[in-house]
Figure 1: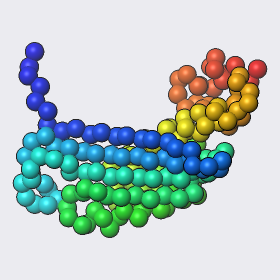
Figure 2 (figure 1 turned 135 degrees about the horizontal axis):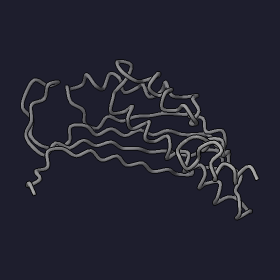
Figure 3 (figure 1 turned 60 degrees about the horizontal axis):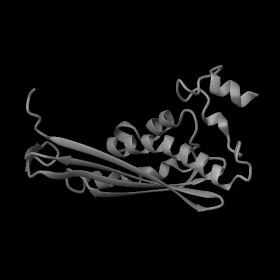
Figure 4 (figure 1 turned 135 degrees about the vertical axis):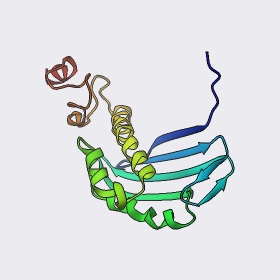
Length: 175
C-alpha cells in the first residue's frame, strides 16, 4: 500500500442550540487547513501550512415554522487579504427563507457563484439538515407524548430514500 501524505483537511462542525421557546441557533464552522506549503492564487505568493479558510455562520431560526430570522457570519481566516471580507454580509440575504425542501437550491440562488462565498455557501447548505434534526429533537424533548412529538414531518418527505413518498416511514406517519 502506498504511503498517505496529508495535504489538506476540511472540517465542518455544526451545533444546534435551543435559545428559547421560539428560536433555534444553528452555529456552523468550516475550516480548511493546508498541510503543506502551497501557492496562493488569490494572494500571488507561497504560503505556509495552516488554516486557509475559517468561516463561522450563525443562523437564528424561528420554530416551528423553520424560517431564518437572523443570519451572521465571521470570516476568521480567508485567502486574498480583505477582498473575501467584502462578501461576508451576503449571509443576511438568507433572512426570511424557510429551511425545508428546496433549501439548498434557495441558498445557491441567493448566495451562490459571484453573489457569495463558495465555502460559506457549502457550510450553510450542510447546516440545513442539521437545523431540521435540531427542530425535531427539540420538539421531542418538549413533547409530553413520548410516541410522537408535535413536529412538521413534511420536511422529511422525499428528503432521502428512507423518507421517500409511499415508503414505509411515510406510510407509517399517515396511519
